[in-house]
Amino acid sequence: MQPEDESIETAPAEAYTHGHHESVLRIHSWRTVENSAAYLAPHLQAGARVLDVGSGPGTITIDLARRVRPGTVIGIDASADVVARATGLAASERVDNVEFRVADAYSLPFADASFDVVHAHQVLQHLARPVDALQGFRRVLKPGGLLAVRDVDYGGVIWSPASSGLTRWLELYRAVHAGNGGDPHAGRHLKRWVREAGFGDIEATASTWVFSTALEREWWGNSWAERATTSQFAAHAIESGRSSPAELERIAAAWREWAADDDGWLLMPHAEVLARA
Ligand SMILES: C[S@@+](CC[C@H](N)C(=O)[O-])C[C@H]1O[C@@H](n2cnc3c(N)ncnc32)[C@H](O)[C@@H]1O
Image (spheres, rainbow, N blue to C red):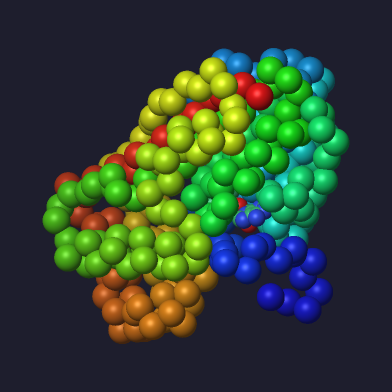
């Protein structure tokens, strides 16, 4: 962390597994409502006030803002760096009904019943106390307001062709993620967490990301090759004693090999839940 970094500390039991290396943000910046929040899209109404928790680089948040005009969207994130980046992106795209702030998902700095929609994409999986966070989301929703949460489940990631390097990547990824206080199998628990937090009218569905074309494989595979060796994930894997630089190089090579293979195909399953406060 830079001395001037104004990021807030997340709970001591947690560390954000991916960090905000360029190779990570490149992947997160591809995200839109269409490819990451299609289940929410039909429920977005013009004039709505929306909170996006753990908004990261802000591409989904900005897309939400375009869809609820003249409503407003606030994106919050624990990292001051990504908040600055998202703020810059909104300005360059001339979207003025969105605002980004540094804040903690566990203690939202907003009044009770102040949002129509609270959205969180790929965030609950990184929290050691997801139900506590969801209770806070419910507090800031208006009665009858809409919750929309979506998380991957790394227990269901499948690919072809078979690769011992990618098998080791998945095993290591799940261990590092859990070691950081999160849950790599969050997807399967979302519905229960939302019910335990007191929400009603729960609708639990799923959708996938598939990476298959040469362009998709190059983008996803090469980003992961870089993440395996240079991102916060690599640092966590080595510092926790779970891996070594040599093994991470082998994992990166496996990703490059997969990306170069015309038969390469990979699927990530995502659980998504809509519910009412
Ligand atoms: C996987 S990224 C998802 C970003 C964005 N929602 C997207 O899908 O592009 C998770 C984000 O949650 C943020 N985060 C993790 N723990 C947090 C906490 N306790 N409070 C606020 N943000 C948090 C991280 O900084 C990161 O930007």
